[in-house]
Image (tube, rainbow, N blue to C red):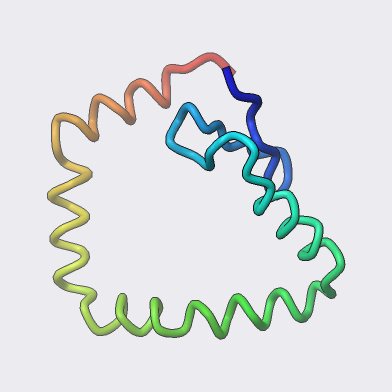
Amino acid sequence: MSEPIPILGSDRLSPRSGGLPAGDDSVPATRAEHAKAHPQGLRETKTLLARDLVRNIDDNAEEMATTSARLFGSDAAREAMLAFLSRKK
């Protein structure tokens, strides 16, 4: 079994769960580069990169709300949320 790959913070990405292939060191390398950055630069870059996403959400808010309600109201979503909420902490 492959070792999980550490990524930002304490999150872990396992190749067995559809993550990166074993031996792919791009995530740790990118994380190391991000650790060198100033928080202001990271914050402003995130804002710039998210701009189109936010605009798309705003422009299509009604359609996205309808889709979200349909998906989160499904039996599968309710089952997943119940499992999440009843897990041991």
